[in-house]
Image (cartoon, rainbow, N blue to C red; front, side):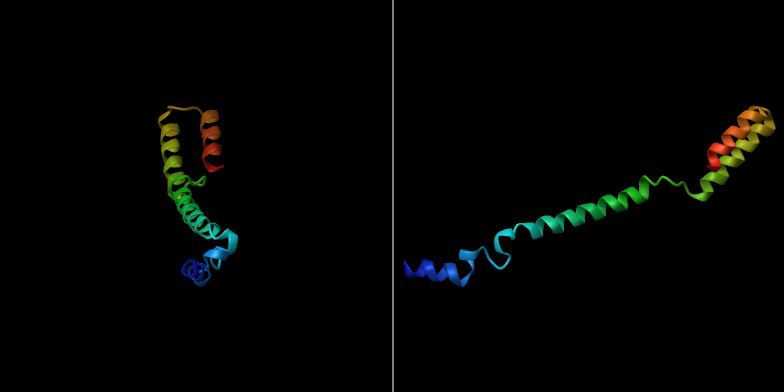
Length: 86
């Protein structure tokens, strides 16, 4: 039929549109980038390997208080201090 042939060539159905045979890759790339960005933000927010400086100071203060009260000995104090400060 002539109408079907005109429709195919007019709207690009015969050559898979202007993306060619890889027209499905663009949505996959788009959604892949969106998902990767979300994962990156979540990892930076919640699973950061480096603790903020305030947490280190608070940990050292608690450690010093325990050492001052005699709850831990000098060796344990120095070991824990080295663990906290890295």
